[in-house]
Length: 87
Image (tube, rainbow, N blue to C red; front, side, top):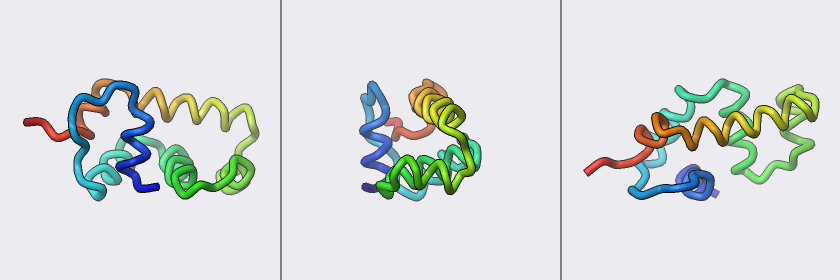
């Protein structure tokens, strides 16, 4: 799955087209923590939860909290506005 496909799927209300793949990656790298970005990247590469937890050295409670934080950030208006192409 590409980053564009993942972001399109994860954003709840997307009324505009997303920027190019490289720009999305740059914005997400800037807006997410290193672990959050690595989680997002691994998830889109279809790694299992166990692989992600092991790679990021997290316990399940912290993993669950991080997943929620990532989706909240991606769906925040500020970040959504950065991810879309404005006419």
